[in-house]
Amino acid sequence: MKKIVSVALCLMFASSAVFAQSKAASAGKSTASSAKTTSSKTKNGGAIAIGYTTGLSDADTIAIRFGVSDIVAIEPMFGFSVATGNTVFGFGGKVLFTLKEYSSFNLYGFGGMGLNVVSPTGADTAVTFGVNFGVGVEYFLARNLSISTEVGMGGAFAKGNSSFGTFGNWMSNLGFRYYFN
Image 1 (tube, one colour):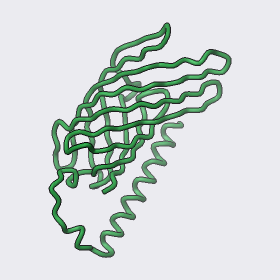
Image 2 (image 1 turned 60 degrees about the vertical axis):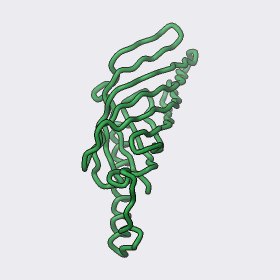
Image 3 (image 1 turned 90 degrees about the horizontal axis):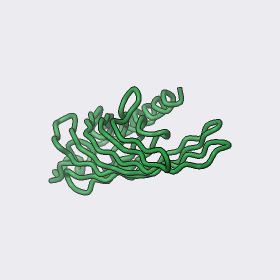
């Protein structure tokens, strides 16, 4: 239920941002909007995005994507979950490589790593180091708003409990992003 509410809130925020942007654009077309640019990041998205991702770990994450070049981006991530009996804090990041760019979606590869700190009530705190890699597709609902999903493999390494394999429960990863220009 928590994930459904979180996704709904993210969709409401994103749709209000798109509405505000389209209203501002239709209210007064400036000469800056008609200026030509050479970066391919103006077709879909932009150089900086903020996003929300669910499905990768015990905690959903907030991420900021920085476009390093037309095909490479870095994405630091932060997430936490506080529930009865269990607290999770996670941070990490990934590097994304655009494999193919289409008019309304991008296909990309990624590699990343992160740390999760899990503090169960009445038990020792566990720190898990994880690595992952895979592919994803990002579909643009509007020029600056996208939804994405990823599949891949990952490893989680903790004292006395390590694993490696495909990741995900009912989906590998689902994310929303708003790009700023």
